[in-house]
Amino acid sequence: MKKDFLSVRDFTSEEIVNTFDLAAAMKADRAKYGEALKGKTLALIFEKPSLRTRVTFDVGIQQLGGFSITLLPSEINLGKRESVYDVAKNLERMVQGIMIRTFAHQIVLDMAKFASIPVINALTDYSHPCQAMADYFTVREVKGRLKGLKLCYVGDGNNVSHSLMFAGARLGVHVTVACPEGHKPKPHAIEHAREDAKQTGGSIEIVHDPVAGVSGADVVYTDVWASMGQESEAEARKKVFLPFQVNGALMSYAKNDAIFMHCLPAHRGEEVTDEVIDSPNSVVFQEAENRLHVQKAIMYQLMK
Ligand code: CP
Ligand code: NVA
Image (cartoon, rainbow, N blue to C red; front, side, top):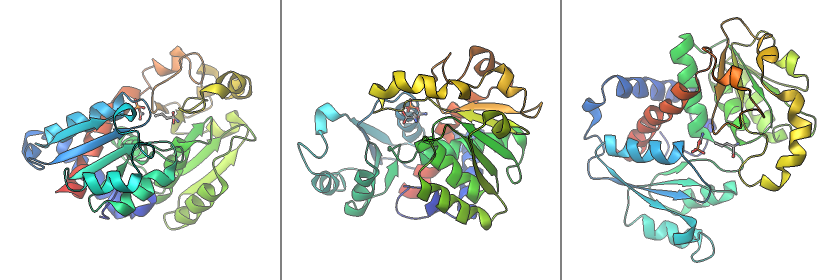
C-alpha cells in the first residue's frame, strides 16, 4: 500500500480486493482486531459537514484500539489561521494519521505531500474514494461478484461519480453515468477511468437518457443534485435534473433484482423517491454501515 489513501486509482485491483477481504474479516470478527492500532491517534479534519464519515472514522479507530480528534474549521481555519504546510508539520509530530474532508482537491494532495504520516481523502470537490470502496464492497456482499456487473450512476457528474468510475474500472465493472448535458464527470476523469477499464474488461459510458442508462443495470446509484458548496445552485439544478429522478418508473428498466444505492444524505423527493429508497431492493443503510468496515481496513493498512 502507498503512504496515503487519496484516490482509488493509486491502488491496484489486487490491493482493492485485498482491502475488501480484510474489511470482511473485520466485519465478521470485530474483537480480533480490537488492538490492531492500539494507542494510535487519527486527526479528523472537516471543512464540510458530515454524519457517516465522522461517525465511521471515529468509531472505526476506537474499534481498532485507537483514538480520534476532530478538528473543525472554527478551530484550525485551514489555510487562513495557518497554512496547510504548517498544519501538516505540526500534526505529524502529534498523531499517526490525518483524515481530511475539504473543498479543493489540491489541499488533500498538499497535506499528503507535506505530512510524513498517512493522509486519507474523506471527500473533496473532486472525489470520494472511501465512499466508492464501501459501495463496491457492498455490491460484492449482495451480488457475490463484481466483474461484468452493470452499475448505472444517475445524476450529477460529481465527486461520487468520479470515484465510482475509478473503482469500477479497477474492478471490471461496466459503469454508465446518466447525466444532463453540461453536468458530465470531468473529461480527464472519464479518460483516466477508460484507460484503467481496458486492463480489467470493465467499461465507462456516459449517456444523457436515464432510461437507456438504467436499462439492464444490476445497480442503480444516485446522489444529491447539488453537492456541498453548491447550495446557491440548488434551485436552478432542480429543473435540469428532474428527468433524472430515480423513481419506480425508472427502476423498472433495471434488472428485476437490481439494487438501489445512494451515498447519503438523500434529498427524498428530489433525486430519489421514498418508494425506491425504502424498497426491499434498497441497500443504502448496509452501504452506510460498510463505510465503517472498509475504512477500518484502510486505516489498518496505512497506520499499522
Ligand atoms: N456519504 C457520506 O460521506 O456521508 P457524510 O457526508 O454524512 O459523511
Ligand atoms: N456529492 C455529495 C456527496 C456527499 C457525501 C457532496 O459532495 O455533497
